[in-house]
Length: 212
Image 1: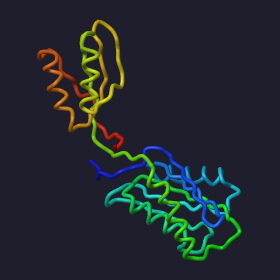
Image 2: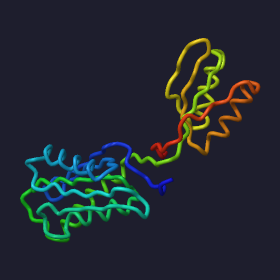
Image 3: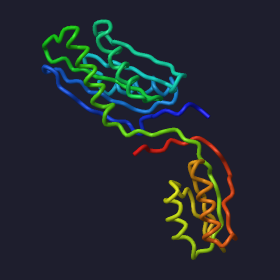
Image 4: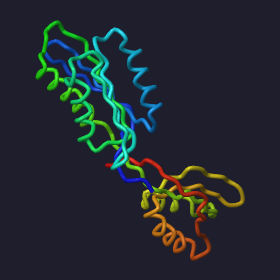
């Protein structure tokens, strides 16, 4: 399995104002360089009239990453690098960030720019919902109708989710559980059904689950 690391769950945006300049930080998940580039292109198009759209990304996580930054016309080292430093320090991987600046008429100087881009990046990194890649089993189980509600409660208890329900003579459920929770669920299912029912693993894969 891949090294465990956190990823952004959803696209998130925050804005700050520094001496009349607007800084709009937009952060999103990206699972490949192509996805990151497509996001950067979309943000540049959305804010085509901005003074600068400073992009950074980290693809991968842990010890295996691809990093990128650009100052997009700002003085060298004042924008992309500080934004990337914030992203790197956040522990996030598979993440792309664009900090958009609308110049407010007052020069901030080298130190001011570094501080502003750092704060803009921090403003969005600090609030984004985070997920973690975990191995999961996708399983199927056939149960009688009178067990359905109890099985729904049991599924939630073991951090699982119901992917599908097929109603026929019995109810065939497609469920998903973190691998580490599966055996405990299976034990409870056997107890609930007096040993008559158990789930069958159909697939094992990686899924991103929310970190609370």
